[in-house]
Length: 146
Ligand SMILES: Cc1cc2nc3c(=O)[nH]c(=O)nc-3n(C[C@H](O)[C@H](O)[C@H](O)COP(=O)(O)O)c2cc1C
Image (cartoon, rainbow, N blue to C red; front, side):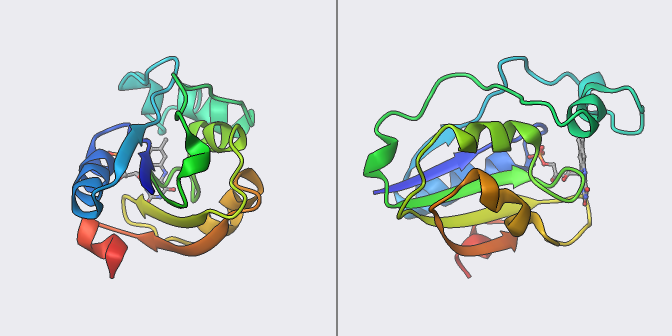
């Protein structure tokens, strides 16, 4: 069974994830932060904005709900916006709570211009046991499947 999991603060990654799920016939789960992000929260040019406090304070960022029957999925597609050259903390906190052993994991990310960089490597400690298929920077769902 296939699962598309995503976090999106501003809608770009959400569109890709939903299109991808439709294309794959996969279930979809949105990572929704327990405390939703306001526009001010993600205004990274403000040094004391929430996003900067979370990033530089290495904070855990809890999300709402859980994926039921996670163990039944053998292929997981994980999508998020690149924040500071890697996955947002809320994605790391989410991933840590699950057992990724034996899952084929495809990571896709959208960005404001930077490349995929070390996004995959930096995520690996949080998805231990997963078999990383690829990590790709995307604009559309088709880019994930190329
Ligand atoms: C807190 C924050 C940090 C970001 N850091 C980066 C970055 O390091 N490199 C980059 O190219 N874009 C960065 N961006 C831009 C987002 O990756 C980009 O706009 C993304 O497509 C947004 O996806 P979303 O609409 O699904 O939230 C950042 C955006 C925010 C809010």
